[in-house]
Amino acid sequence: MLIKAKFPRIEVDPHSHTPYCTAQLSHATRSAITVKRLATALCLLAAPAIATADVLAFKAGAAAWLAEGSGPAFDAGEEQQLSLTAAFEHPVPLIPNIKLRYWDYAEEDRNRPLELTTLDAILYYEILDNPLIDLDLGVSATNFQDGRAPGRGSFEGWLPQLYGTVHVPIFGSDLGVYGEAMATSWDDTSAYDLEAGLAYTLDMPVLDLSLRLGYRQVENDFDDFDDFSGKVEFRGWSLGLLIDL
Image (cartoon, rainbow, N blue to C red; front, side, top):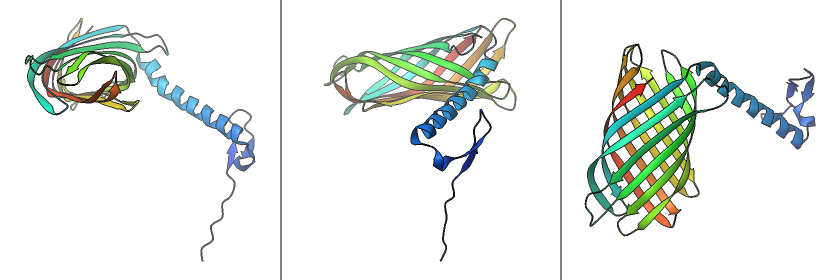
């Protein structure tokens, strides 16, 4: 028969450098230590952002999105939509960068209208910015405006989301892969916005141009969101241009 014995764990206080036994600590003390560790981890995550955000930059982009919409118990047709984005980056420590994203979908069939306009207000940090990878992480407040689905009425409101974007050059060339995502599960409502594809970047003396071809899928599963319940989806190919000043 194998007998297992548990021994108290010995740790060292990071300030006094004095060893202590975790079994002798109260619950409050252990909780305080855990909070300090989480705070340290967050500071370490923010440190790369402080180190890489070293210049002022303004980014603007536009994309033609051939989106096919669908809603509760019906499918809408493909509609060419315009998606716009603008971002401002700065070197001020700890203060996040700002990005706005906007797109609008309107089904031309007025007998079964599907309409939705969204505006994403994003705060993010540049976590990595080097020749191998660009990685941004942050949060978004998404505003749904003029939402309408056949037989379900209209809706509007705000939804918090997590945000991230990545770009990786292929073998150090001007051609790379990119991805952009937002997702949330909030108050019984879940949503995500995913886009991935290829990007070709032209480096110029004053600005950089990035031509992007990707596929974008948006799904919003609303549950009593402004008295609206149901799933509304959009998906299709996207062709866009991003300018980095």
